[in-house]
Image (cartoon, rainbow, N blue to C red; front, side):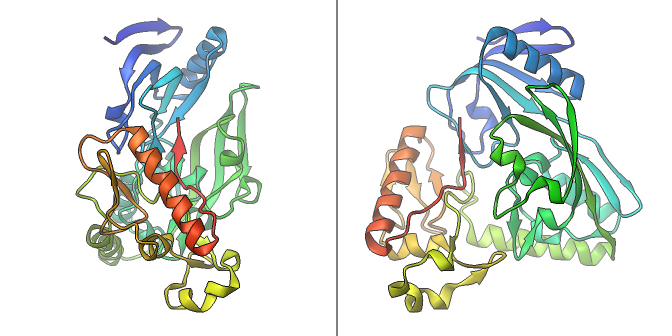
Length: 317
């Protein structure tokens, strides 16, 4: 049973079930849970974790996150920084803003440049951390600067785009593995036609609804697409027909999984999606252990067939 603890300026809950914060609807309880709405509350929660000598995990939208069935024996800090304002063609956005809400904002203000993100799940903070991308677009292409909070020095850091060290589904924030909490970002857009922007965003949403298993709880693509240069030469001709630019030539992992005969494979309440095999879906009663089993099975089979070691796109806690 969760109870409130007031520490300085922040409320901390104890024993909060984490399945409600995961798109997977999977996960045990957090020993402590804090929903921070400003930097002062983030600082207080960080100090609480430090004083208790407990690990700290930063939770965004729970859209690419596999939470253990045992939960988390530390402090879960949910980032709910919701700043969202435009100054001309520059948008300042808090890390806790959902990408979907940012896109609505761009339509309302006739700002173009993020249409590729239509249907992208999760928060802006998560998108920045993992340099989210789709349809040949990436968040790095629009970032002017990012502010973060260093949990060791307790300092606020501002970085320009170059200093963020964006790479394929990565950034300096991902490399630092939780040392810094993304607070906000400034995004550069251009004036456009609101109706055209809305139509382009909806087109991407419709594409996802048609091709992705949105009828089941999921956390998006389980594995990164495979750099064409990493595909053994013996298979290059066989995969040539499916190569796409994302943002460099890659082989869709969904194709490899399907060709390896794993489409529809089930274990417990989890299944390799029939619609999009790079998704492992929750059929209703899946556990984290069920998902882990399928991740291992997919990795093993794809390596056996293609000699390719799949790299996971998801995060664990």
